[in-house]
Image (tube, rainbow, N blue to C red; front, side, top):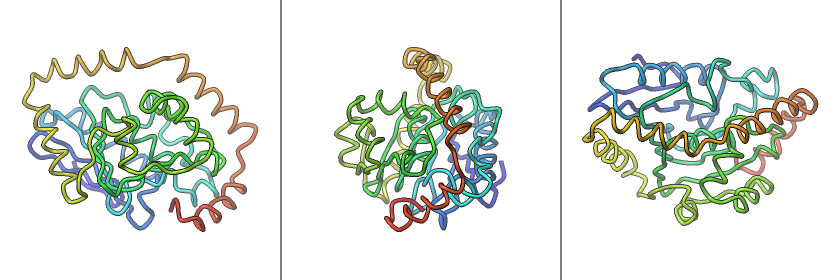
Length: 254
Protein backbone atom coordinates (compact mmCIF):
# COMPACT_ATOMS: atom_id res chain seq x y z
CA UNK A 1 0.00 0.00 0.00
CA UNK A 2 2.51 2.58 -1.20
CA UNK A 3 1.78 6.28 -1.53
CA UNK A 4 1.78 8.00 -4.92
CA UNK A 5 2.50 11.66 -5.62
CA UNK A 6 -1.19 12.50 -5.90
CA UNK A 7 -2.64 10.23 -3.22
CA UNK A 8 -1.63 9.04 0.23
CA UNK A 9 -2.72 5.73 1.74
CA UNK A 10 -2.15 5.00 5.41
CA UNK A 11 -3.25 1.85 7.23
CA UNK A 12 -3.19 1.76 11.02
CA UNK A 13 -5.43 0.35 13.74
CA UNK A 14 -7.59 -1.37 11.08
CA UNK A 15 -8.40 1.97 9.40
CA UNK A 16 -7.31 2.83 5.86
CA UNK A 17 -7.05 6.59 5.37
CA UNK A 18 -7.09 7.70 1.74
CA UNK A 19 -5.94 11.29 1.29
CA UNK A 20 -6.34 13.12 -2.01
CA UNK A 21 -2.98 14.88 -2.32
CA UNK A 22 -2.99 17.63 -4.92
CA UNK A 23 -3.29 20.57 -2.51
CA UNK A 24 -2.03 23.19 -4.97
CA UNK A 25 -4.89 22.17 -7.30
CA UNK A 26 -7.35 21.85 -4.42
CA UNK A 27 -7.22 18.07 -4.94
CA UNK A 28 -8.90 18.34 -8.32
CA UNK A 29 -9.52 15.00 -10.00
CA UNK A 30 -7.05 14.37 -12.78
CA UNK A 31 -6.99 11.09 -14.67
CA UNK A 32 -3.98 10.08 -12.59
CA UNK A 33 -5.69 10.83 -9.29
CA UNK A 34 -8.84 8.98 -10.34
CA UNK A 35 -6.75 5.93 -11.21
CA UNK A 36 -4.81 6.05 -7.94
CA UNK A 37 -7.99 6.55 -5.89
CA UNK A 38 -9.59 3.47 -7.41
CA UNK A 39 -6.44 1.44 -6.75
CA UNK A 40 -6.32 2.64 -3.13
CA UNK A 41 -9.96 1.69 -2.49
CA UNK A 42 -9.38 -1.74 -3.98
CA UNK A 43 -6.29 -2.25 -1.84
CA UNK A 44 -8.20 -1.26 1.30
CA UNK A 45 -11.16 -3.45 0.38
CA UNK A 46 -8.98 -6.50 -0.19
CA UNK A 47 -6.78 -6.05 2.89
CA UNK A 48 -7.41 -8.25 5.89
CA UNK A 49 -5.92 -5.44 8.03
CA UNK A 50 -8.70 -2.94 7.18
CA UNK A 51 -12.25 -2.73 8.51
CA UNK A 52 -13.07 0.95 7.86
CA UNK A 53 -12.01 3.41 5.16
CA UNK A 54 -11.70 7.17 5.68
CA UNK A 55 -11.58 9.49 2.66
CA UNK A 56 -10.21 13.01 3.11
CA UNK A 57 -8.18 15.66 1.31
CA UNK A 58 -4.88 17.45 1.86
CA UNK A 59 -5.66 20.92 3.21
CA UNK A 60 -7.03 23.38 2.35
CA UNK A 61 -9.66 21.56 0.22
CA UNK A 62 -11.41 18.23 0.25
CA UNK A 63 -11.83 18.12 -3.53
CA UNK A 64 -12.60 20.78 -6.14
CA UNK A 65 -14.09 18.26 -8.56
CA UNK A 66 -12.77 17.28 -11.97
CA UNK A 67 -9.53 19.00 -12.95
CA UNK A 68 -10.89 21.74 -15.20
CA UNK A 69 -7.56 22.23 -16.96
CA UNK A 70 -7.59 18.62 -18.16
CA UNK A 71 -11.34 18.70 -18.73
CA UNK A 72 -11.02 21.80 -20.93
CA UNK A 73 -8.23 20.31 -23.02
CA UNK A 74 -8.64 16.56 -23.55
CA UNK A 75 -11.64 15.79 -21.35
CA UNK A 76 -9.82 12.58 -20.46
CA UNK A 77 -10.86 12.70 -16.81
CA UNK A 78 -14.56 12.92 -17.63
CA UNK A 79 -14.90 9.16 -17.92
CA UNK A 80 -12.52 8.45 -15.05
CA UNK A 81 -11.81 4.76 -14.70
CA UNK A 82 -14.13 2.81 -16.96
CA UNK A 83 -14.58 -0.33 -14.85
CA UNK A 84 -16.31 1.20 -11.82
CA UNK A 85 -19.55 -0.51 -10.89
CA UNK A 86 -21.42 2.72 -10.14
CA UNK A 87 -20.33 6.07 -8.81
CA UNK A 88 -16.72 7.07 -8.14
CA UNK A 89 -15.71 4.06 -6.05
CA UNK A 90 -15.19 0.40 -6.95
CA UNK A 91 -17.53 -2.11 -5.33
CA UNK A 92 -16.98 -2.04 -1.57
CA UNK A 93 -18.23 -3.99 1.43
CA UNK A 94 -16.44 -1.92 4.09
CA UNK A 95 -17.83 1.35 5.53
CA UNK A 96 -16.47 4.59 4.06
CA UNK A 97 -16.47 7.73 6.20
CA UNK A 98 -15.90 11.07 4.51
CA UNK A 99 -13.77 13.47 6.58
CA UNK A 100 -14.56 16.72 4.80
CA UNK A 101 -11.72 19.11 5.62
CA UNK A 102 -12.57 21.93 3.19
CA UNK A 103 -14.56 22.66 0.05
CA UNK A 104 -16.23 19.73 -1.71
CA UNK A 105 -17.29 20.93 -5.13
CA UNK A 106 -19.14 19.25 -8.01
CA UNK A 107 -17.33 15.92 -8.58
CA UNK A 108 -15.74 16.36 -5.15
CA UNK A 109 -19.23 16.82 -3.72
CA UNK A 110 -20.21 13.56 -5.42
CA UNK A 111 -17.24 11.82 -3.79
CA UNK A 112 -18.56 12.98 -0.43
CA UNK A 113 -22.13 11.93 -1.18
CA UNK A 114 -20.99 8.40 -2.05
CA UNK A 115 -19.45 7.94 1.40
CA UNK A 116 -21.61 6.17 3.98
CA UNK A 117 -21.67 9.27 6.16
CA UNK A 118 -19.78 12.51 6.59
CA UNK A 119 -17.92 14.35 9.32
CA UNK A 120 -17.19 17.98 8.50
CA UNK A 121 -14.53 20.38 9.63
CA UNK A 122 -15.79 23.84 10.49
CA UNK A 123 -14.03 24.90 7.26
CA UNK A 124 -16.07 22.57 5.03
CA UNK A 125 -18.30 23.89 2.27
CA UNK A 126 -20.34 22.04 -0.31
CA UNK A 127 -21.31 23.14 -3.81
CA UNK A 128 -22.77 21.70 -6.98
CA UNK A 129 -21.35 23.71 -9.90
CA UNK A 130 -22.04 21.22 -12.69
CA UNK A 131 -24.23 23.76 -14.47
CA UNK A 132 -21.55 26.45 -14.19
CA UNK A 133 -18.89 24.20 -15.69
CA UNK A 134 -21.06 22.72 -18.43
CA UNK A 135 -20.95 19.05 -17.41
CA UNK A 136 -23.61 16.78 -15.98
CA UNK A 137 -23.52 14.68 -12.79
CA UNK A 138 -22.40 11.13 -13.39
CA UNK A 139 -21.72 9.73 -9.92
CA UNK A 140 -25.22 9.85 -8.46
CA UNK A 141 -25.57 13.45 -7.28
CA UNK A 142 -29.14 13.77 -8.53
CA UNK A 143 -30.03 10.64 -6.55
CA UNK A 144 -27.92 11.02 -3.41
CA UNK A 145 -28.25 14.75 -2.75
CA UNK A 146 -32.09 14.72 -2.59
CA UNK A 147 -31.86 11.68 -0.30
CA UNK A 148 -29.60 13.65 2.02
CA UNK A 149 -31.25 17.10 2.11
CA UNK A 150 -34.58 16.85 0.27
CA UNK A 151 -35.36 17.48 -3.37
CA UNK A 152 -36.16 21.20 -3.07
CA UNK A 153 -32.89 22.11 -1.36
CA UNK A 154 -31.06 19.87 -3.82
CA UNK A 155 -32.62 21.65 -6.78
CA UNK A 156 -31.64 25.02 -5.34
CA UNK A 157 -28.01 23.94 -4.91
CA UNK A 158 -27.80 22.53 -8.44
CA UNK A 159 -29.65 25.35 -10.20
CA UNK A 160 -27.78 28.20 -8.44
CA UNK A 161 -24.34 26.69 -7.83
CA UNK A 162 -24.40 28.38 -4.42
CA UNK A 163 -22.41 26.88 -1.58
CA UNK A 164 -23.63 25.39 1.71
CA UNK A 165 -21.40 25.89 4.75
CA UNK A 166 -20.76 23.30 7.43
CA UNK A 167 -23.32 24.64 9.90
CA UNK A 168 -26.12 24.56 7.32
CA UNK A 169 -24.98 21.12 6.14
CA UNK A 170 -25.44 19.88 9.70
CA UNK A 171 -28.91 21.44 9.97
CA UNK A 172 -29.95 19.86 6.66
CA UNK A 173 -28.65 16.40 7.56
CA UNK A 174 -25.95 16.36 4.89
CA UNK A 175 -23.25 15.78 7.53
CA UNK A 176 -23.49 13.94 10.85
CA UNK A 177 -21.13 16.14 12.86
CA UNK A 178 -19.21 19.41 12.54
CA UNK A 179 -16.00 19.65 14.54
CA UNK A 180 -13.06 22.00 14.93
CA UNK A 181 -10.69 21.62 12.02
CA UNK A 182 -7.84 20.21 14.13
CA UNK A 183 -10.22 17.64 15.62
CA UNK A 184 -11.52 16.31 12.31
CA UNK A 185 -9.28 13.27 11.92
CA UNK A 186 -9.16 12.28 15.63
CA UNK A 187 -12.96 12.53 15.84
CA UNK A 188 -13.45 10.55 12.61
CA UNK A 189 -10.99 7.88 13.70
CA UNK A 190 -12.88 7.63 16.99
CA UNK A 191 -16.07 6.78 15.10
CA UNK A 192 -14.12 4.31 12.98
CA UNK A 193 -12.91 2.64 16.18
CA UNK A 194 -16.54 2.34 17.34
CA UNK A 195 -17.37 0.54 14.09
CA UNK A 196 -14.32 -1.70 14.36
CA UNK A 197 -15.43 -2.77 17.84
CA UNK A 198 -18.46 -4.48 16.33
CA UNK A 199 -18.79 -7.84 14.55
CA UNK A 200 -17.57 -7.03 11.04
CA UNK A 201 -19.67 -9.51 9.11
CA UNK A 202 -22.70 -7.91 10.73
CA UNK A 203 -21.52 -4.38 9.92
CA UNK A 204 -21.01 -5.28 6.28
CA UNK A 205 -24.37 -7.02 5.98
CA UNK A 206 -26.17 -4.01 7.48
CA UNK A 207 -24.26 -1.72 5.10
CA UNK A 208 -25.36 -3.87 2.16
CA UNK A 209 -28.96 -3.81 3.34
CA UNK A 210 -28.94 -0.02 3.72
CA UNK A 211 -27.51 0.28 0.21
CA UNK A 212 -30.17 -2.00 -1.25
CA UNK A 213 -32.96 -0.04 0.41
CA UNK A 214 -31.59 3.38 -0.61
CA UNK A 215 -30.69 2.50 -4.20
CA UNK A 216 -33.17 3.18 -6.98
CA UNK A 217 -31.73 1.68 -10.16
CA UNK A 218 -34.12 3.61 -12.39
CA UNK A 219 -32.97 6.94 -10.93
CA UNK A 220 -29.29 6.08 -11.32
CA UNK A 221 -29.88 4.99 -14.91
CA UNK A 222 -31.77 8.21 -15.68
CA UNK A 223 -28.79 10.26 -14.54
CA UNK A 224 -26.38 8.07 -16.49
CA UNK A 225 -28.54 8.27 -19.62
CA UNK A 226 -28.89 12.04 -19.48
CA UNK A 227 -25.18 12.46 -18.78
CA UNK A 228 -24.26 10.35 -21.80
CA UNK A 229 -26.62 12.31 -24.02
CA UNK A 230 -25.24 15.64 -22.76
CA UNK A 231 -21.69 14.62 -23.44
CA UNK A 232 -22.54 13.33 -26.91
CA UNK A 233 -24.55 16.38 -27.99
CA UNK A 234 -23.62 19.33 -25.77
CA UNK A 235 -20.23 18.90 -24.09
CA UNK A 236 -17.62 21.31 -25.45
CA UNK A 237 -14.09 21.35 -23.95
CA UNK A 238 -13.58 24.86 -25.32
CA UNK A 239 -16.58 26.15 -23.40
CA UNK A 240 -15.32 24.40 -20.27
CA UNK A 241 -11.97 26.17 -20.64
CA UNK A 242 -13.75 29.53 -20.87
CA UNK A 243 -15.97 28.74 -17.92
CA UNK A 244 -12.89 27.74 -15.93
CA UNK A 245 -11.59 31.28 -16.14
CA UNK A 246 -14.90 32.69 -14.92
CA UNK A 247 -15.09 30.19 -12.06
CA UNK A 248 -11.55 30.96 -10.98
CA UNK A 249 -12.41 34.65 -10.97
CA UNK A 250 -15.30 33.92 -8.61
CA UNK A 251 -12.93 32.04 -6.32
CA UNK A 252 -15.26 29.09 -5.84
CA UNK A 253 -13.23 26.26 -7.33
CA UNK A 254 -9.59 25.72 -8.17
